Length: 296
Image 1 (cartoon, rainbow, N blue to C red):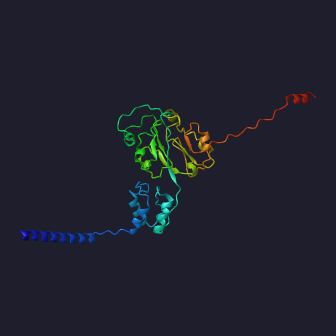
Image 2 (cartoon, one colour):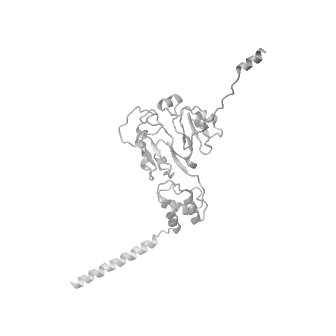
Image 3 (cartoon, one colour):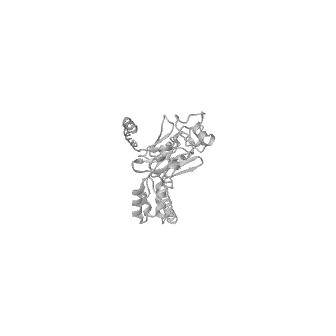
């Protein structure tokens, strides 16, 4: 009985040794070298894995940074310029500094200005709604209001407003990852420069219908009147398909376009109220003295 146990132990030990040798040989044969710089770069990335950099995750982005000779076109929107400077220091490569951006909703067609004309009964997702019907209002360009953008935001930078039925972007939390932009089937979310105090001017409408149709569907729709384009001193307003668009690079935030928009479709954020100019009273004219001089 003791001999059989001993033989069993020896057999198992032999099999273990053979397996260990095989594993060692296989590991050496199929060993993949990983540049230690990848782990070092991955360590300083924000670990958001949001995909805003164009890679499926921070580890994949670190590999691209290490293995790409010119990384001037690569950028981590969550980490921003500070993180990219650290990456440049580790890799000894040059990075391009970029202005901070923030997501904006180019639709202000809430329930109070864009009345519902139909009622949809089905799965409440923007992706499905966009595929099977044009929306519950007569505007086929505006927000569908099912909150797909809110669901994909990993930074709690968005929520749905119960009164308007539109998503609200919390600028201070927005990391410019672009997940909401990708999730929106109507392409109404755009990344725009984040100026000091979060000053922004943009057209909050994407309706390409003619003026009468657009205005009937939404009270604050752009009617393509071109008044904003005519008054802009920097040629920052572009007109196409009955719709105005303000170039964020050319715009100097003068707000002249906001004042002339007849439908209030141009949105301005965080600007102080404009000072009202005091009108000096006109000098009173002494009519009696003028008449006396005339008679004389």
